[in-house]
Image (cartoon, helix red, strand yellow):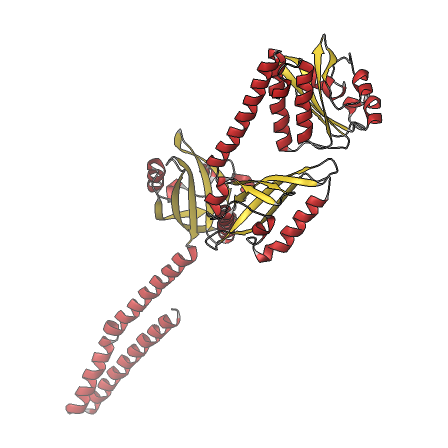
Length: 491
């Protein structure tokens, strides 16, 4: 730029636009001014003069090509295919004969008015990548400075300052991020890594030369074939501007990290890939969290315990809104997710206050304390069950309470089993009492009568009478034994 220090404005603009064209292969840049709602050429170093003349004095409007529309709407207009875009319907016959197939235009706004538009034409159908959009916006900002000042020297200083700030921002991003930013020169076979690469994947003694083969040796052997094939395919296709891949990458300590790589491909005028700028991001922690989350979701979804997650209102800790219920919740309560999600847990009518102690539950919610071991009685339309309820508060990183998790374990069968055991114990105690007390009376009589018969003389009449008493006592004993046997069979 110093060589055009004393040049007129058009020469400065032509030189600047030619520099932009060098960044975007196959492109032709244009800067048109806006006066009295019509377009006039300021600089178009590479566009055919016939085309530049044909759009001179073109009136701006909603469908006036890319530049006319951008100036009218005061917003960026991206036309990937001039031949089919309705905004070019009246003017495509001017562009297509010159092999101008795509046009991206960005207005230069001063005091809320479009004073010019910066446009990039392509000789092929094309849409801008995210990085290209950022460059277009940056160029439009610099052109705004140029057009406002109208002094070549000031323009040069502003442009240089903008480039310097851009470079400084790149350096600051490199220092601030843990992502590994890189610039791969395919012609020199050298990858220039940002500082983030060495912070994340380990410092290396030799940082001078980093060919692709050095990167390839650190890709996991099981991933290399698919990664290499994908990269080779994208680089070989002139239409491709972006490459991305997920694979495992070895750190200096020998441990493999899961990484995500995104690269933007720069090509020469023949479409050959000459440069790729991108980022390598360590996704190991995210992968682990995803796996843990999938496991957690599987557990919550398939568990036999009812799970309810509710959002808490920070302004009212008792104001809850249900976010999620699992299949077990539906099976136990009869409420499907569509019936309860987005609503208050108070709608669960089966938990009757008259049959449950809600004081502990209310205290836990009000004081934001966990609650465990509380058994609730729930009555549905067709059944009644008992649920052992656990209530857990959830806080965010700042310690602010945000959610509640309620886990309900159906203990109906266990309580029923305990009740049956207690009933059996009661019957066994009754049998034991009968054995120790009821049986002793007729047994004692029998023993006494037998003692009288054996050890004392009796008349025949007395002997008959004693035998009758023995028989009566035997019948009584038999009746008691039958009763015990019957009770035992019912246990």
